[in-house]
Image 1 (tube, each protein chain N blue to C red):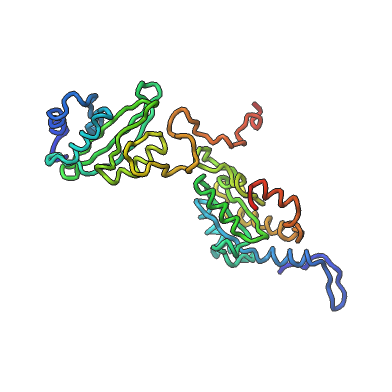
Image 2 (image 1 turned 45 degrees about the vertical axis):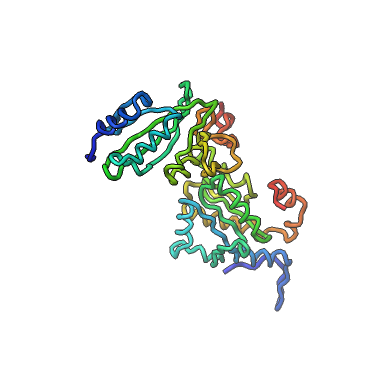
Length: 175
Length: 167
């Protein structure tokens, strides 16, 4: 059960801002796209399973099509040859979109300090939440997801049109 | 144990290519010798097509880099005679300034990707190869990463700077 956002309440009515209602709804119906390349992906499979039950946070439907996904979950080592693919997936996602980098490799390259591995996905796409660990336990992935939910709940509806956001995307050469 | 011994292979090679190969050794029982890029195709062709030897299976082509050597780059062929259950290893050393060697795709189609990989990592140019482009690394990579002059680490890494460790 989710608590109602702050607002004015009286007998028979409840008033709040549209931002908060939409944020509340979005944060509990995030469709994640699991981009799993290695062991962090295995941990995510455990997270999706019945024991940790990722679905209870509203992500009932992992979306394997980027067009319908809200949240890109990058889990695992991203080789430089994979980088254009990941970037393409991100570009195909519709706004608003969020990105979570799960594990040391997706966040920073991890132990793979080498010429063939991308040293963190934030070299090619903007990242909202980083989950540390090698690999992180399902609890850590869920905590990262909760942090994404917090961002989604409090995000202004106009953020995606803001010059700061456009500058951020331009920095990555997107749009 | 193979049907023919390393000595029999060596004897046949000596009778046909006397003086065209050197440094014969048998580490761990694997017959190994060196030759030059002028002779490599003849020797490979003989090893493959000779009725008695029939080294029909090209196990692998790899490269190696010894920067202290005059001919610093090496190309190593591993052949396997499935009929005789015996293997052989052929090495060719070439200079970095002119790293060319004839392609083995004329003998084995399977050499195609092996040579692309060796080109990708060592920059060895296989003359006559139908499509000598990178196979494993990103296309716009400029380095040949397995050569010793190129650093292993990615230069974009920022969390290993000395200031983070109080140095």
